[in-house]
Image 1 (cartoon, rainbow, N blue to C red):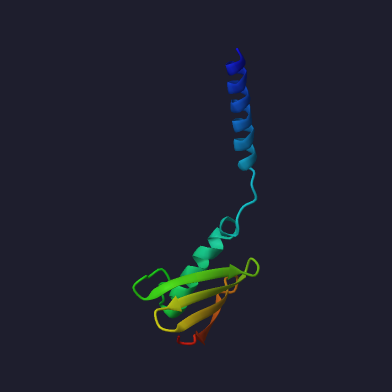
Image 2 (image 1 turned 60 degrees about the vertical axis):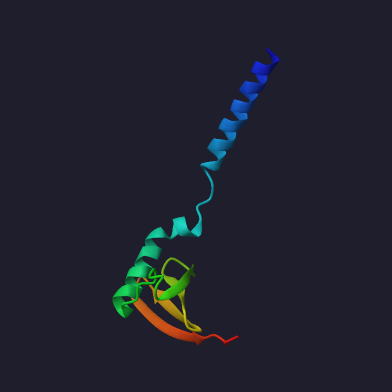
Amino acid sequence: MKNRTYNHAFLFVFFLFFTLSLKATPTKRERYHDGYLKLIELIYDNYSIDIGNRDLYEGYAMRFEDECNAEVKLKTYKPLIKVFKLNICENRSEVVYEKLNPR
């Protein structure tokens, strides 16, 4: 009988934990998901750069300042980072190159 009580308590705690985790605060990626897709599309349309191409680029980082303005840093295999300042609401973009110090 005692073992059965522990099983019910475990199920109750598990159910409570699961339902509370469903109401978690969305991450930035979830909050700006459509914005991420627009950033990638805007860079491709304006500069013909596919930031997901691992043959040409090591990786990228995106940072949203608000719902319209964002910054994308694209690391090339050379000691160079391309920084894109984008406004997805107005479809504007600007590119800045940062040279990294060779080691």
